[in-house]
Length: 260
Ligand code: HXC
Image (cartoon, rainbow, N blue to C red; front, side):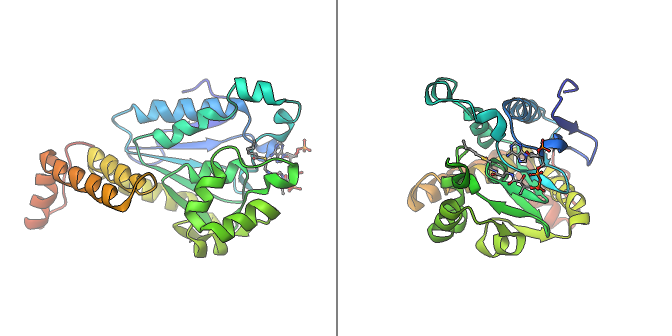
């Protein structure tokens, strides 16, 4: 955990949470392969930690991440991009079971926007700027942006952003449904940690099931998705925390979930 060079990992920012901060300020947190390896390795390690109930991913005030590292990608050709399966490790963030919160301030462009969309909850500061400007560099999104942005904001806006490279401010991103909420820049981290602490205070297996159920909406038909939800809903009645949560409500006291 301490060997990372491009990220900071803080397990003490809020109870039962971890704060992962992108830390390449000179390059506006451009996502090179080292950042990818470190973010994915740190997130997977935190995902395996039973004492971590939520992971917050953030950048700096000026930039969440200004995209994949253009200088690193520039010299490559098709064959080495294909054989190294460039960027494929990022997909593993979508497979984490622990809920994740992206706290986005400043630029979230290209790979930065895609990285934010790999997280479960997306909180934006009023200074956030989102876009998929790859086309201006003669390329297209490569970390899922054409798919996740389209699912988040719909075809017309995703097409416009991907085809023209136009960016959107936080207000437009919120109207379009890309972000869950906008908060003042100076409150962003505290608010993201508060969300994370709230999530981490729930039953971890039940939070994982809620996450799995929502994610299923993007992978299957409505009938199959509802069937999947119903199976998990029945299954939570085998988790001790169902008795605790419902018991606490009836007894008018705060719940003390066992599986946290
Ligand atoms: C490498 C980057 C970078 C990037 C910024 N920098 N973005 N380096 N890759 N994506 C570096 C700059 O080169 C510069 O380094 C330093 O960070 C500060 O950036 P400036 O441009 O001087 O800052 P500013 O004028 O404030 O402009 C900010 C900006 C601009 C509007 C965000 O940096 C910008 O347009 N960046 C690129 C955004 C972009 O196109 N992202 C998509 C990338 S492609 P020096 O050394 O000069 O000081 C992508 C593809 C995903 O993500 C998958 C496709 C395969």
